[in-house]
Image 1 (tube, rainbow, N blue to C red):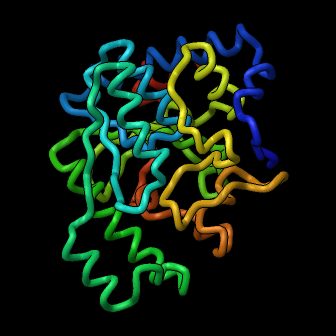
Image 2 (image 1 turned 90 degrees about the vertical axis):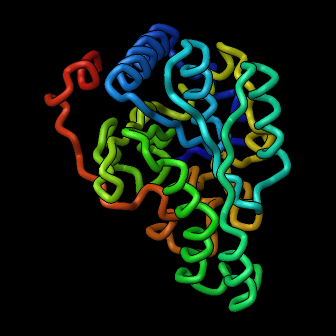
Length: 259
C-alpha cells in the first residue's frame, strides 16, 4: 500500500469525475439516513482530512449530527487552529472534550510525561486517559456515532464495515468513508473548498497527538506516522477497538444500497 503524500491536493487529478459524483451522492444519502434513524448522533472528528469531508457533508446539509473533537492536551497547534477555521467557515463550534486533569497528573507522577515511548502498555494507558475516557463521556447518551475511518488507511482497518454495532457502548457506529480512496477524499475537499489541516501538506496523512505523530516516508502507509516506534499491528489508540459487531447490510436497505 503506497499512500505517501507530500502535497495531498495533487491526488485530486487521479479521480474520475463521474465516480466521485456517485460517491458524493451516496455519502449525502448515508448522512441523511443516519440522522433520520437516530435521535442523537455525533461525529468524532480528529480534524483531519476524512473528518473534514464528513464535517462539510453534515454542516452543508444541516444534518442533525453533532460534531466533537478530543482535545488531548498534546495536539499540534495546526490541529487546534482547525477549530477556528470550522467556526469561521460554517458558523459551527465543534464541541471539545478534555481528559481528566487528575488522571493526567497521576500518570505523569508515576511514569513521566513521555512514558508512552517506553512500552505499548504505557502508551495505551496514555491513550486511555487522553482519548478513550473523554470519548466515552462524549458518547454518553447518544444512539450512534460516526467516524472518518477508511479501509485503506492501515492493516488494522482492512476489514472495516460501513455500519457496525459498538457493543461496548451498545450504540451504532458508522464509517461512511470506509470504501473511499485517499484520492477521492482529496478530490472532495478540493471540489468543495473545505478547510484542511496544514499538517497534511507537510506529509502527515494521519493526525494525532504531536509527540506520537510524524510525517510519513515514501512507500509507507498512511498510519505509519502514528506511534512509529511500535509494530504495525498495535497502531490503534483504543477508540476503534472496543467490541464491534458487524451489522448485516440487508438489515438496513437504505444504508446498504447504491454501492
